[in-house]
Image (cartoon, rainbow, N blue to C red; front, top):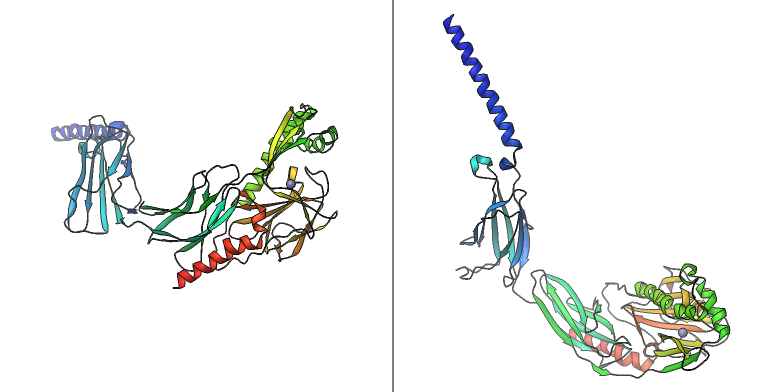
Length: 458
Ligand SMILES: [Zn+2]
């Protein structure tokens, strides 16, 4: 009897202890002090590294970090590169991984980075939660090999030029042409492995022009090489045009109806300013968008012929013309704009010939340009045909050299039947005169490509 009593008491104690254990366990599991979330070490398991520039590894923990240790090893030796005890238990820490000052005795292109992070949790008998992450570092200290092979002799303000260069690296990541005006031109693979070709443009509104090849590899090594051109400045025309009431109440009023919400409260002269400046900017932005794309198929040659879109077309408006519009009095200038194409006129509804093969990238209405056709000819070169009465092609159509693409008209901001012809290089308006000139094309495009091939084959 006595024994049974004692054993009952014992059982009760056991139950209490167990309950206490369960309760304690419950408390531990649900208290932030005993949280079980491991620190997060953010780094890819493999990366390139030039070993000159430190790189960042972000470490975070929801309760706070206690300790971070990092090692670099080359398979034979191991160097401790970080050993930090935090006093304030930060939730985030950025570890700067630097190449050890003393370095390794054995040079190696392959390093292993080990990062160990511990949080302030009391879990694991007060040891906290540990995270270990390893990353393979491929050391690449070799800069890309870049050099300018050949280019057009010069470039004219508002004009185009060609450059061919070499860029080679085992792990090439980025390759582009950097300019003084912020535009990056994309090069296209040319002829043989490691060679590139690029058409460049000097925007008419930029006073200076300079261009550099920039090559970056996966490890962050960067090489730059200047592309040298003889710079030819060029003066463009300034015109003062009278804005007649007939024009303002006719064409301008009609075009303003394209944007009723933006123009309904404007006076007739304000409408002219809106159409000639704001609407033009909107229409040009669309042109820029459709003409900025570059295909990256390897180029073997570029057999471009002079553009000659209208048979017996007379030039009635020039590229780069800075046009001021005055109203009633010559001193009352109400708007200005740059004319970024040439105007050609012949007979009404004349065939517009697409002189070089290409693909139609736009065939639709575009504000001041009216019904507009745009064709991509490769190498970043586009042509635009504006004010058309009829478009004979649609987007995606292929055009043969010499085929008619549209018929002239007076849609958009045009007073009489004529063609507005623009040429663009990677989204930048350039002088059509160059692309209409056989000698210019021969010297600046065809000969440059032929000479480059000879240099590469040597
Ligand atoms: Zn025009």
